[in-house]
Length: 363
Image (cartoon, rainbow, N blue to C red):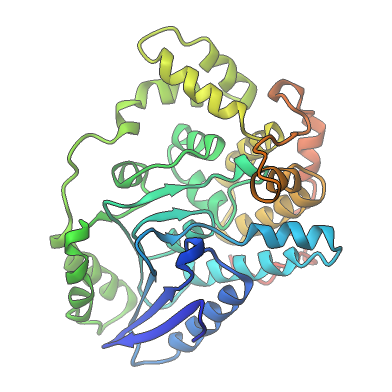
């Protein structure tokens, strides 16, 4: 246990509590290492039959990773961000392959690194306070931590919408997009721990997972209305089903029907995102459909390191986190000016390269 991560057991349940509420439980490198170590210990502990991931405080499960440390590691020449991402991706992969059921309580802000933890879970619980996003294009990055895998498995128009805009969604849309399994009202959260402890955790992994889902199902809270993205299904398919980022922006600009205001607002949002990052994301999610989980993490590592060293990330962090002028100078500044050859260079390294630092991840 450390101040930033608390590990406990309750019955047969191992509990990981992210404990940095003052920074919305953002992941530090020390937290990543500690969680991975504890998960490995619990995996071989027969008294622990399932694991619960949760955040402390009232506002967030986990708002992401420590992006300021990436900025510092770039400027001091240490390249400490390489170790951060390697260990983070290993932790996320560990969760995807975990031998025991994992429950993620996405109560509050769940973004970036928090999504990496939650989307790997067996049961992803959304609440009335869930606010979910992969907002990386806003800082010149790409949706990593497994986003290549879990976003590319969604309907393409939804994946491109969430990946390019970085817009946040709530519980209804999380269920609609397949990014949550159940919606539990905050009034039922006190019953959740007791419910989990009452489960018969004997049997094989599949049996335990089925019992978990059946036990939590009675706590599910019906949605009050049709999810916003479901109501926008037609324009989302029309615009974000286009064959390129340029075509998407042109399609949105040409919307003149009942969804003209939505299209205009969405186009304005894209106007604040890194044009280079958006082009990278489009290709990332297109290629991700053909890659297994381990290759998705290897691709993300290639893209993220180049985004730091050759892309827009350092400028994005400067503008939004360091100087806070909120005026990033993207290179290039317009979607139309992104060089296809530059985008292709980000994907030049083969994910199957035996020298890749994540080459040992299993498929």
